[in-house]
Length: 225
Ligand code: DC
Image (tube, rainbow, N blue to C red; front, side, top):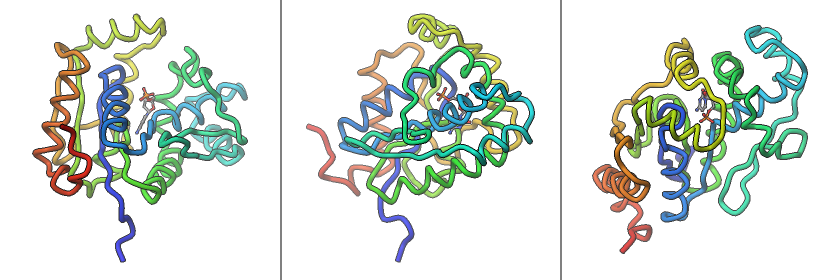
């Protein structure tokens, strides 16, 4: 018996590359569970920040990790991270969390626990999961892998338009340089540069890649007209 009977589409890329939008739209079109893995790293970080713990102190971060009650629920085909049964909402995207999340996400114990939780979600149904290490570490066996990138200038404009303070270049540097599962183009992933494309164009490019990777042969019922 295979451990996982469901399919996973892995979408990786740097911050503000447009990967969340692509993942959301693909999930809607193909009727998949949508998982934003960054939210899980943000949830742990939020608790680190709330408790006044130094995000640069791995032992202290692991202490928080052991104390918190973190769960992932799926509702209406959307995954949701819960801390002590509550969804933290907008607090996950606060400036403090933006500033600390890459350091928390670099702690191996944090990654170990969250990767295990992410893999469990695949037992619930076909899904699309976006993050930094989905194609390389979480689901290296999936044939369906995309890597969405965009120029730093465009990514800055997108974050500014959302009204967020986010040191993207620093976060990308930390995410790409960390020892445990750094951001990278996974083996077999197709790169889409979204800098000069609108959402519809990125989505069409993503559908084309999935077609080439065999998604619609395996899932003919999810083919769109
Ligand atoms: O996707 P995001 O910007 O919300 O992710 C927040 C941070 O979480 C990101 O800077 C790095 C970390 N992250 C990670 O290390 N691995 C993932 N699969 C997803 C996010």
